[in-house]
Image (cartoon, rainbow, N blue to C red; front, top):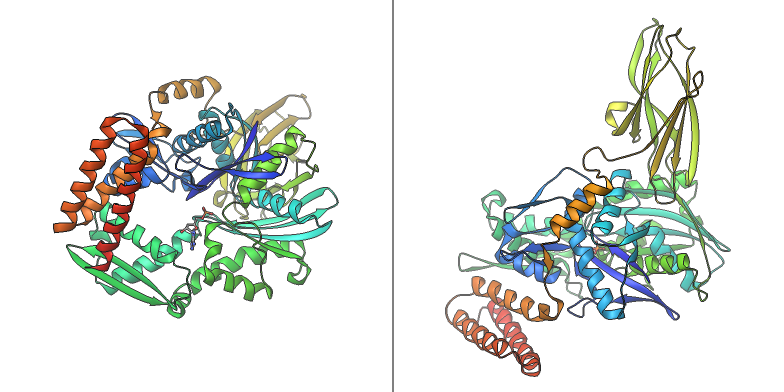
Length: 567
Ligand code: AMP
């Protein structure tokens, strides 16, 4: 069984394919979204999702979230004295989703199609694949999120020839893709995006307004306070009712603070963010050579597209209402599950041939001769242009630039700048060429980009026939199979918190958090209801525990409400 996984910046989720179409797999708390957060306690128990977020409110130093942004980087996350990379933290999320899927489906799940933002570069895609492998999956395919979303929409609406624009605004990334579904071929025409733009920016906007209004210096906040205020801002942002304002509330030093931000004010403050959104939209249209009027459907994906302000903006920008027939939180996972089913060649599914594009230009560094016969280095020579349909392979020829040159370095670069140094370096192939006159030695360089967006570079010296091939490795954190297996072994002492205890644990952690926020009588009540619940947990009678859990949750709901209403 292949499952589809949307490994999101803020939330992750998994889906599987049934004869009636794809379905979301609920997690251990019975919820469809699992926050991409990890917390580890002193007993080496790993908490993932909502439980991790609850734990982080009380133990901020032992948890991490938003790590997808650092995928493939050298950034280290320190959780209670232990150090992890973003891909390792992601592997815990994936492990948890795997366990949930196995429990729900009643069978072992070993294969997955995992989605990544279309804009993820080669390094980040490989790191995502490794995260899947660290979690024990065979990663069948890495699929671009908008492509997955378009599959979900395209197949359900069964339109024969449609041109989509997928507008994907998640927690931390923004992607625009233009796709065409024609008969059974889905082609990505162009992708563009911004790796650092998403719902978090809107949350920060509310948070900053609140802090400013109450003269609180952001830098003076402890980590715990910062998380608490951020969570309050997040809750405030998700109020999508008919109110003409956002209300943010928080307690500091026993004082109840509140800010009302009118939607109009919010729109004004968000104008800069909306301007940033326009840029990739324009670029993708230009790259695809398509006018707005030639787009048949606008598909919204990502939690942030639930914001009325965002929907209004999209409506205005495109002059029509976007399609929201599939839940924007779920489209990617559903599409990934369909892609998994296509790979398995399930009979009930019409197979769609998927063509994707390379989201960025890949090239190399060259020296060019300027007028005074001076050699000027640091120039970028594109080999595979961005938005080339993949799999793709292109060859360029290069020549030695000076007499007796015996070494040639093929510097593999990714980016859009004219200057090599402004682009991202993916690696270097060094070749020794025969001693000869300038321009006499020819080297053919072939870049091949496969369907998993993995790059292979081949350099061939014409005179000697010597060929060097390099599958681009992430120099920062790439691992050999042995290293990976060793790290898996190392990490195996960390166990995902047992799923059957999760609903109790998340409530106890919530109780702990509320205890820290409450004072006086509410604190005493909390203490009493928590003790009562712990007492029943000790009895280990599942029926009584289920009943007590319900009571405890109701009591916590009531206390939380009291805490805010200031009674
Ligand atoms: P994703 O990365 O697609 O899971 O999107 C997560 C982002 O969507 C986060 O920034 C959430 O705050 C945001 N989000 C989720 N639900 C809502 C909502 N109802 N209203 C506004 N933003 C939301």
